[in-house]
Image 1 (cartoon, rainbow, N blue to C red):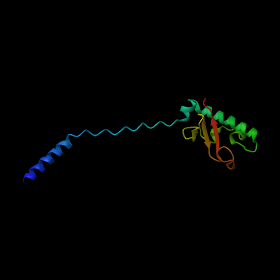
Image 2 (image 1 turned 135 degrees about the horizontal axis):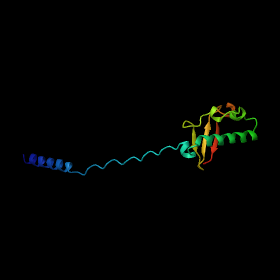
Image 3 (image 1 turned 90 degrees about the vertical axis):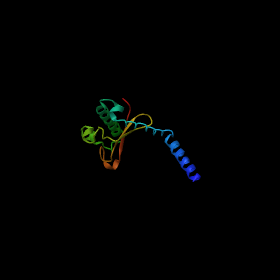
Image 4 (image 1 turned 45 degrees about the vertical axis):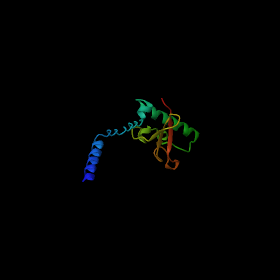
Length: 124
């Protein structure tokens, strides 16, 4: 019986100590996800005109150097946007020098045999 009383006292002491423990530390806050850059953020409010002008000029230069690779907007005298959208769906990345690089799938702006086309857009 003496052991039972000691055991009960010990159990009561353990429960009291557990109840008085230090509060749990709050979970560390997750850092806010960085906002993905957009073409407008990188090239300015008039990004569409700037990008269209820059890519059209690059297409003209490429055709002067390699006339056997036709770019549809140049050969058809049509705006680039007739062949590929320049908006928030346009695939791009930023290279190590801070230039936007825009990609067009094979066949979008030139013959499919010429493969995917990319154009480097320097910051305005």
